[in-house]
Image 1 (cartoon, rainbow, N blue to C red):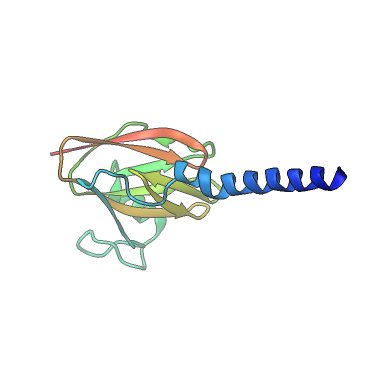
Image 2 (cartoon, rainbow, N blue to C red):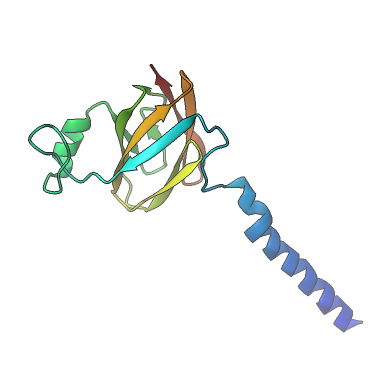
Length: 150
């Protein structure tokens, strides 16, 4: 009887582990969203050149000045600042993790890894305009939205 109980417990634990690794993973996707009309592309940008373009030698302060209002910050609690910006189609936006914690930020279904105090420059574009896309930061679902317009 004890053997049957242990086998039953092992089966339940195994199903629980399977559900957490396989079944639940469909809730969080690292692939682009089903909408093929929207694209998010990433640019490895680490600085600014003489024509206002990025170069490896620029400082964080120079990047902040270059991108100005085309910058979204994510603070300690993954809040998006600004919460609902509007950008023109094809705009390069600096996504900036202002937390000491590394985190994943999902933009329109695409997940990006951000180290602590890390940033990325991502070009926002869509074939269908206007397009509203959601942002998830860490465990915060819908921590912001972005409206892409003509």
